[in-house]
Length: 479
Image (cartoon, rainbow, N blue to C red):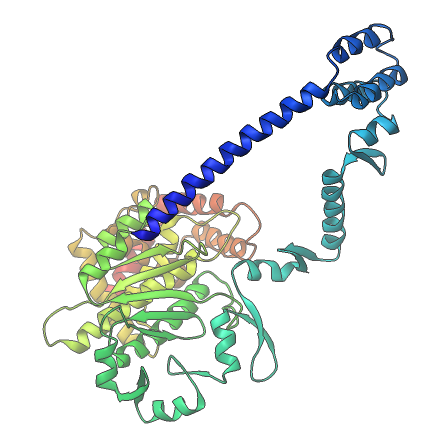
């Protein structure tokens, strides 16, 4: 409280100083104005009346007289008249603060800007771009803007990463089973011991410590950062499913999976508590994603700092004591979250239609059983998912699915089945097959426009010609 009073007093004092300064300044100005001869203004008018106002030299002479007689405002006005008559009047330009720069008269500030523009153009031609107060290779600019730094891995290979990553590498840490550990820590991890504060504890104690979002597990792979309060053993499985789903999403898009480290990692969050899920869901701004958070068990969240997309999902409790079943269902949620975020983070001149990114996610969740799954496992998972779709009213009519896309359970499951149809069905209509191939080619050219138009055409073809074959594809899975 004393500090606030002192602060108020200081501010009040500061206001007083400013006021006193203003008064003093006014007095000085008054004194200065008194110093001007009373007839100076009248004399100026006589001099102006006696000259040709179109004669630059004559006007310049009066401007100099005005300056010498403390009529500074009038002098500046007359000097501007001079350079209107003769833009290259060097003495008038000089008194107004201009300098010759090339074939232009510019102020010092303008000259500095011109020099900087010339420097930027020169450096740009050399593939350099200004970042803060230095020029860097253009390919480094975006990474620096995102807060990334350069470092060398243990093999001496130069890479980009977060300052945290750089610090880890410099400390000799390595990623093992989802956790960053030192050489000493690796020995503990092999013995199934985990660091909590300055202690090493067993897995059960570590799970208890990380059971709330004050101290969650934060685990990583080459492509994902996974934050969760789930047990460690499940989290390791979830990481495998997340990486596999991302690889599958790129495969569906016809794109090569980036090399580890080339892309920023995708942030995934899995909560166990409905209140945590709702709290995060309340932060969603996009209307489509907000509907997702209500209709499904996963939604996309935008990082306000980077603009990148992450995903939030929930660990499902299907029935008490059914741990394995719960794990399987929750791993499916992880696949949806990872695939949805991966596709949303792809950048195109024109983004694909919403049903496409959510369709790939639903495909990875419900119509593809994930890593190490047999074809039988995949078929059973597909059949189970189609059973859920039947309870929702069956596949949505393809003429109504796409625009506008409604992220209801029925729409999401139908979109997932459509992705399976496009990527796996042997008997697609020729026009649909050709248009799908065109889209895959377009996705390899992310800077070119036309992708949205191609998607609209595919949607029209699916609604017009694909219904019968799509139904046959669904029947083949059910059979």
